[in-house]
Length: 204
Image: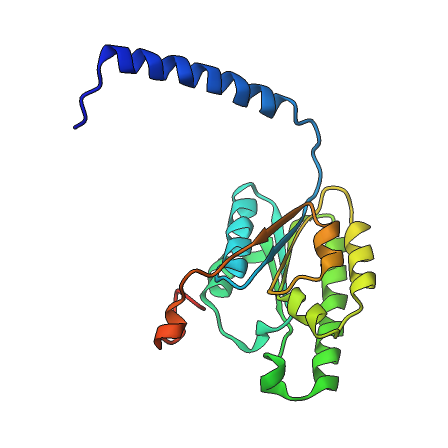
């Protein structure tokens, strides 16, 4: 164990006291409470994972959560099974039919995206829901299955206390501009490049 002298301890305590005062003042200056529009994007892994972490947090506070999956609907995922154990506190709609290179049917992809957005609007209108996750909506917008201006306007017009998380690579600039929080997840290294397949509990 590192030996800490009395002088070092006193210097550290004084430094942390100053830091705490600055931090407390910064926190006290924040007065606004509102529903956030959060965008998780970028090439790195973890965008949906982070969104479902927020779902767990919201559920921990007793609030209801809604999920609409725009692309991954064909997948059986562990997060869906886990969150549905919360019963009527979670509404989950897997409405995608896979990535466009899997369906190879533009009309079908557009119809699925439109149906998913209709469900998303219904969830956002439910006053009991505190968080709505629009999983892979960015993919549907990237391929122009949906009108980004219409989507952004609807998200901006949501009720004041509703939090919404949008996930997926290549977030449209208009969506990023409208968001309160945008996190771009970078990729430094990915096991897929080394030949490791998608695994239960990690990718799904």
